[in-house]
Image (cartoon, rainbow, N blue to C red; front, side, top):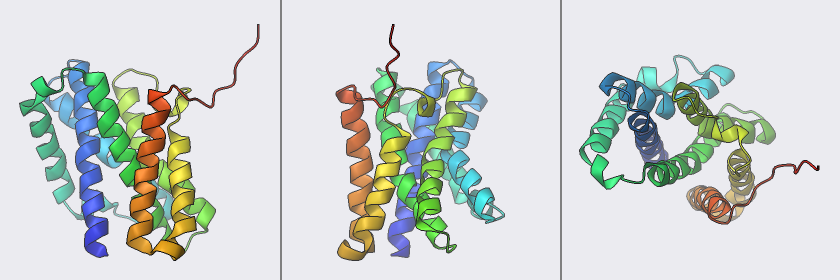
Length: 202
């Protein structure tokens, strides 16, 4: 089980770093700027979560492999940048994978601190979305979490689903189902232009 969770953690770090690096390249940042954007996207949500639950030093400061994963992701993105011609579509894909993984990872860590299920779900959403918030702010775009697109609500649905299925399916299966659910909700919401926005009348 620990290996499964660690794999999710490392995978989430890698794909979020790619998302940040793509955003930096889209804005024509220099190499340092691209790395910083990749790093903050990958660790931002988890850092805020750890600070809120009092888990310090925060995770990435206790294990430097996270920094190397981000560095590897930035190099990977640079080397294969010609394959990411449609940056918007690539950013969407990696961001969606990232929020799916980090929602459940953040929720699981919060549960290990004995917090209530409701708070744990909220912290899962924080873990998944606030790295992207930092990425968008630093790259000069409106954060996705504040737009009409279904974003944080997909994470919320996945977190609740995990709590409901954990006891029935087992921990690994419950996490897998919830991760897939977050990805599919976000993917089809964007594809079909679903939103939860209020329509203002004339």
